[in-house]
Every structure is written in structure tokens, then in C-alpha cells.
Image 1 (cartoon, helix red, strand yellow):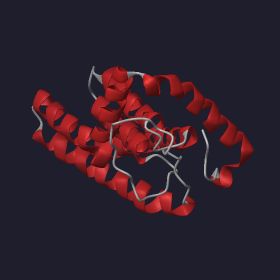
Image 2 (cartoon, one colour):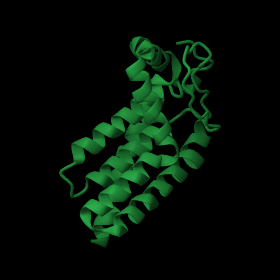
Image 3 (cartoon, helix red, strand yellow):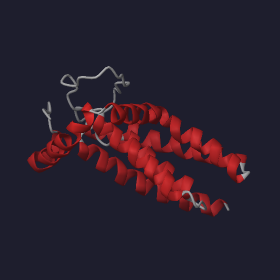
Image 4 (cartoon, one colour):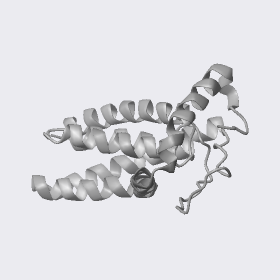
Length: 182
């Protein structure tokens, strides 16, 4: 991986990012992996997958308000991450000019750090899993969306790790707030 600027994180984080990028490289030549990862990345745009999942889970639970609560949580998460945290770092995204693909992904205008897709994925997984036996499924879907951002070279691996951690924290906070309403 050739990075334009590793940002404020230094050589150890840059080495980690490069090692993970090299590990993903063989998958970038796999047709099935590309279909899965580019689809997951696109579904993660604007938390589309999580809003749809919230609607499905609301129907399954017989609680229409669940979808509204999840969408509200996702709106707050997006505001905090995309308009708050990302503005503090302004990290350059990985170079994508070496990708040999026919797939298209939306190019965000925000900073690379942290990954909003990863943060949204863990926040949504936490809320979707609350009171559900489908928790492992929601977290697995979240991990796929998060990893897709490395695969499509929209994020450095460290951006995704930070996004996952941010999402875990926000998911726990959201569940605490939601449990007070119950």
C-alpha cells in the first residue's frame, strides 16, 4: 500500500496499515470477494443497511418504534463521527489509483479517520442485538461492512479499527439510553 500521508499516527501505525493492506491484496483479485465487499461497502453508505435492518427487526419484533429508535441512534452516530471526530484528524484516504476493478464506490469528502462505516456497523450491531438471539449475525454483518472499507481502499486498517472501537462505545451508550426508556 502506498499511502499519501500516514497522518499523525507515525510509522508503527503506517506499518500496520501496510501489512493489512498486503493481506487484503489477494482478495482484490477474487470476483466473489469483490462482489461481496463492494456491495457491503455500498450498502454501508448513509447506513442504508442498518436502516433496512432496523425496519426488518422492527417487523420481526412487532415494534415499529424500534426502527425509529435505531435510525435516531444512527443519525446521532453519524453526526458525532462525520461532523465531529473526523474534523479533528483530516487524515488522507488510501490511494486507489492502483486498483484494477470495474466496481465503483462513492468517494467520501470526509477524513479517512476513523471509518464511519465501521463505527456505524458496531453501533447498529449493538442496538440490533439488544434483546435478540440474532446478535452474532448483526455483528458478523458489521464486520463485513467494516472490512469492506479496507478491501475497496477507502480506509486504512487503523481507520477501521478506530471506527470499530468508536462504534462499540457508541453502541453501549445507545443501549444504556434505550434501556432507560424500557
